[in-house]
Structure formats: C-alpha cells, structure tokens
Image (cartoon, rainbow, N blue to C red):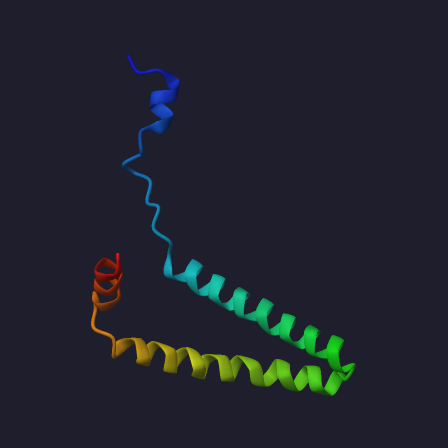
Length: 91
C-alpha cells in the first residue's frame, strides 16, 4: 500500500497541466496593460507632463509590437540548432 506522500507525488493522469489559449491570451493582455501603465507612469514621473505620459502610453504598445515582430523575423534567419551548436563548440 502506498503512503500518502507517495500518492501526492504521483501525477494525476486526468489532470491537464497545459494552459488554455484563453488563459494565455488574458495573461498577454494583462501583461501588456501593466507594461503600458508602467511606461506612462514613468514618463509622467520624469517629465511631469500628463500629455507626454498619455502619448507614450498610446505609442509604446504599437512600437513594441513592431519591434517584437522584427525580432521574431530576425530570429527566423538563424537556423534552428545554430545557437546550441555555438555553445557546444565554445565549451
């Protein structure tokens, strides 16, 4: 007979630990909102201008999405496994 500790350590075959698409989307949106509020708050703290803070809050998400897209496209130019190969060769 298994002890209680052994039962607790055994994974539940019925438990799906994958994250749902909706949860991932909600996390991405909430993270972006927090990031934008942080940027606007820091801009206001530095400049003292509400107009500058709101402008940065509006522009920042668009610019960051563009930068993310360009970053992803740049990584598409790097063959898969190339970075791992560099680390193995250096070590």
